[in-house]
Amino acid sequence: MSSGEDSGRPSGFGRGLTNYGDRDFALYLRRSFARSMGYSDGMLARPIVGICHTPSGFNNCHRHFPELLDAVKRGVLAAGGLPLEFPVISLGEVFLSPTSLKFRNLMSMDVEEMIRAQPMDSVVLLGGCDKTVPAQLMGAVSADVPAVQLVAGPMMTGRYKGERLGACTDCRRFWARFRGGEIDAAEIAAVEGNLATTAGTCAVMGTASTMACVAEALGLALPDSAAIPAVHADRLRCAEESGRRAVALIGSELTPRRIVTAKSVENALRVILALSGSTNAILHLAAIAGRAGLELSLERLNELSETTPVLVDLKPVGDNYMEDFHAAGGLDAVLRELKPLLHLDCMTVTGETLGERLDRKPAVAADRRVVHAVSDPISAKGGLVALFGSLAPGGAIVKRAAADPRLLEHEGRAVVFDSLEDLARRIDDPDLDVEADDVLVLQNAGPKSASGMPEAGYLPIPKKLARKGVKDMVRVSDARMSGTAFGTIVLHVTPEATVGGPLSIVRTGDRIRLSVAGRRIDLLVDDAEIAARLAAAGRPAAASPSGRGYDRLYRTHVLQADRGCDFDFLRGDPA
Ligand code: FES
Image 1 (tube, helix red, strand yellow):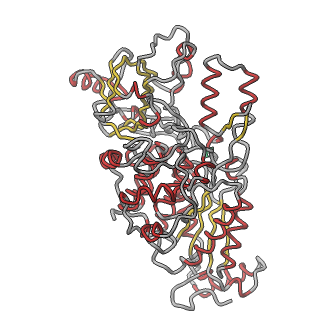
Image 2 (cartoon, rainbow, N blue to C red):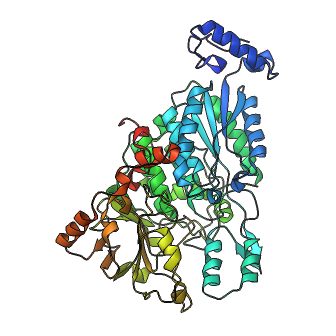
């Protein structure tokens, strides 16, 4: 076995030796134990591609990963590398309490440390469900070993009474109909069995699909890879090619920090806007950029939103599903339309620039029913904007493309819930004093709250209003919203209530004004009264977190939404 230190620069099993105070002994011992895995000398002499593998019995979206892993290994072996998979935490979105976001940073630390601590020359990141891809990208940027992101790919749609169903926009649509009394318990049970019917990530442009597109737009995933369905043979071919590519990257300077730059982050922001992508993607992109020492400015988001058209007709804001997006040309078709707006000199894992990639002929002609031309956009401006104002001095996010246009300029009376428990207790109370033009406010659901910023910003329409046919209301919180949800929903209010932001002193009966055109969300209470209420509230409890273990680490170090809810000690040095 010749891997080790032959070239002067350690590679393969010679990288990062265990410290016994004797390097030769450490290499001898490692080789001896590596031999026990039964590889031939030739295999053990090869450079090593780590495969960051995230299967889990608690992650339905990743259930096809054993097959995908085989394909990655095939590619690595064919290109002359030795593929060695290693497990890291897997985050199955709906199986985690209080919310998966709380564990994204934990997973990112696992990814970073295991890439750094184990002897690998490059790595394939095999992820998919909402938080796994952000965690892997954050960890990979911090570890800065050449990396290729391979995503799970989306689920196929199911069928119910001749209608196509896809998680999870249709989950919410049918649940709203059930709450409104339009369908009964037997029908909602039948729908439940047809919403998520294959392996893969949610079938719409939710957070997982948006982050798959972000990975490709950043240049960290292969071209044309984001939208390939999980069960499509192309997904396996993409896995094989990702393995090959990871071998080709060994020894190159094309590390994640070279690829994640201010320019590629802007390209990714453009893509999120053109997709009307998930609001969560803004938060994750801020965290990924932060690992490279870059700031994601919400003011810049607004500037880009003014000049980025919405091009993609996908649920939750349009009509189609991810499988349609793939057949219609996928992200490649979107990038070609956005080309004049993109930074084309950004490098990608293929070794070519984005511009060189887009100079090649497309694999398929775009289907304009799904991916519109820039000359015929779905809307001339981006799907998301940031809001500022007395209620959110540090910013908030609204997905205007998913809102009822009549509510984009709205003033109403606040109806306040001071916690998730309060919301659950009172939202369906027949005696709740609430009207359709009120503004529902949820406090204490931000990053430092006990709930860890869950996807609770999509407050349900009170049952008594839902039964009268009310479908949308202005809702304001420091929580997040699922990328598959829709409505006039103001999220990520910063600073959050738990650290004493102005959201914490809103009272039922106060008036709130939302102006998406003005990019403002304001509490219509005079400044002196706001100051008096904040003073009376005193020092927020979150200023001195108690508890133990990861919960304590999280609450002590998590940053606000505008910094991506990363930990303060994980952000990178400024680029
Ligand atoms: Fe995994 Fe939606 S639950 S992507």
